[in-house]
Length: 476
Image 1: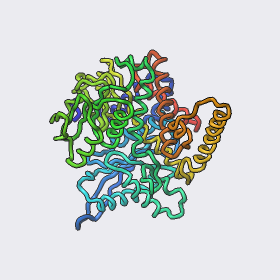
Image 2 (image 1 turned 120 degrees about the vertical axis):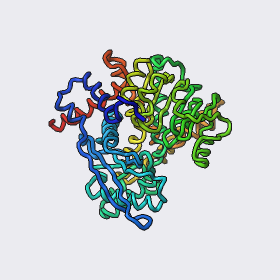
Image 3 (image 1 turned 180 degrees about the vertical axis):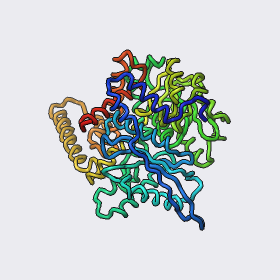
Image 4 (image 1 turned 90 degrees about the vertical axis):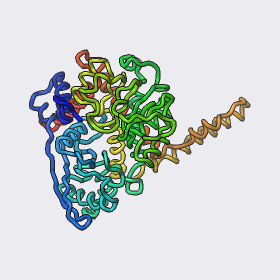
């Protein structure tokens, strides 16, 4: 709940945008063109459910068409409204520009609590929503490509893709109308984990720069860092899982709807996820301390705080009590503009949402390319890579034997070296490269310009500059 005088989510995005614009040399006209949302379509449609007609309200906003198609998820939530969708669409524009995916920004939302409906009812509702959008080209592989967001998953994306294909029976690229689909419906390996994996890669890149780590009053690597995660949904779960299993981080706290659990020695993320699935919350999770006031754990002592659920959870009412020296925004807009000012004044380093959670749109881009090319990544070259590697290994072993050098290649080396890259390997490689390159682009602005106070402002400057360059190329 936002406090009095707290900026709304949309106002927060505009405030942060204006901070960056004040440090740039853009004409007022172009700055305003980039800021405003181009169009928002509101649809109200009826579906016959349980013997009566129920009316639903949905939105699809297009923020910027400096590049097409435009890209952005569709969320299902009872509190969805136009301002929120437009703010999210704006963030998508800047996010795509920052990580250099060739999309404009868009976002969609349906005002619905999906937990109140059976699966077959959700399918009816989703197909009708997709029909209303697709007939206006607000779902189209060349113009507007949705993806999953809060309250939706690959299941809903499969329904949308099938509905679009039914309406466009001769479109060979129909599967590219939406991303985040199941593998058997044209999806790509690594998409479900993509946003959480991107958070991991973002933190890895941050910790590769000792000067940046020092600004956050931290040192060393991710190994042993104490992490609190707010929201163990798809993004929070994967981020916590990868950080704990692969980087040695300790997930000391997890906040969910019904409270929070803590363990100073680290929580087992996989077991906690299963517990939430079975029990509907974190209460009674064995081997952990339960806290009924989950929001209070945002203020607990830790090294890294990962808000991975809703926007506005860190606001002017609690920002001064946040103890984490490093916050990475896995959710969209979890820190309000007012809270951002308070945290910045206290020296907290924030890795901003438009960068931190860009893993989803990055891998969505790979899926879109896969759908348009009609071939999975690695299919043409994987075995060729393996054959070339085998030739080298066999020659090295022959030379060793002929000259009696007395050495041999270790089995582990041979196993990994002889393995050609499959689709998942290539997706993770592409995501890692994207997150590294994007961080370096905003870090360069942050470190080299004395008037740029933080990574968020730097990210906006990089993104706005790229959008402006696209508009100038169009003659604006």
